Each structure stands twice: as C-alpha cells, then as structure tokens.
Image (tube, rainbow, N blue to C red):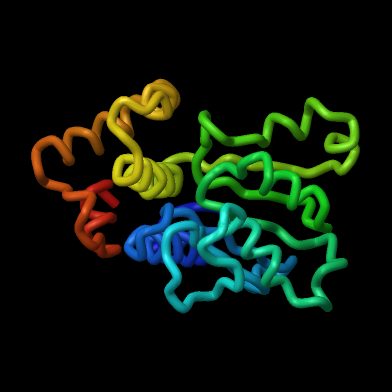
Length: 206
C-alpha cells in the first residue's frame, strides 16, 4: 500500500528503511536522496544501535544518523548536483542539518517534525545557513503519522518513561502520541517485538 505524498514511492521506501532500522534495534529513522527525475541515488538509515549488514558504511557510532549515512552514500559524480532532494522521515538534528548545508542539496522533505532535537529552524537564524537557500517542506497526513510513529516508538523503547522528551513530543503531536500510548497500554502494541509493515499500517489506520 502506498502512502499519499509528493512522491509516494520514495516515502514508501523511506518508511520501509526506517522500519528496518527500528526492527534492528536502532531508531526508526531513514533518509533517501533523489535526483530531479525522482530516481533514488543514495539512502541511509539510523544505525546507532545495531551492527547488521545494511546500506550504511557508518554504524554503531554517535554520528550513525540516517541523513549522515545517506549523504555519505552519495556517489562522487552526484556530489556537486544542486538538483537533489533529501527525504527524511524525521526532522534533522543540528549535526544532520549542518551536513545537509555543507552538501549541495537544496531541497529537504521532512516526514515528521522533531520538537526535541530538530534543527531546521536554524536555517533561518544563522546568516551563513540562510544564504544557502535551502527549501524545506514538512509532510502532513498519513506520511507524517507513520514517520512519527516509528520515531516515537523508538524513543519509548529506548528511554525511561519520565524522560522530558515525551512531554515535548506529546505537546507537538497530541493525537498521534495519545493513539500510540493507548495501543501500548492496552497491549495491542508491544514495543519489544518485531513490527511488520502490515502491522504498522493497520495500527495507524492506512
């Protein structure tokens, strides 16, 4: 089942890759870079918590974020291409935002906001970053909810319940987080178990 978005095939692949990361024990976040024709030229997923064979070269280090891996996987002949678009399931952190700025990528599609660690706002606050002219679009609807779900469930699995990140996430996404918390509390969703794409789509109501 494809999700509705500007480029549903790319978002489908992003969500599949994020699900791979989640099931491997890392944060459920993925990034894909496409050219002006929509063809995938590089991809990466979060690999902070697993050492499995994947599309990534960077694993099990503090910089093994999805966007960093996608940028690292960009072929040399594409690294000066200014017509690339980066799709990421979660708003980039300060490190990943900086990496995008220092690349030639000038368009970013974001699946879900990250009110805790997201740093897209910095693009309008710093002169050097602002003059790069990077365009950012935040998705809505089912794409946003699916991307948020994989991120939120990763946090639920990895952090203590009283961690302040949850109050921030719940404030930004009250409906989405309430739905997921309800599923967890009612045992309809077990965060320690493998999550299939079909289960994810059913839980979200796609």
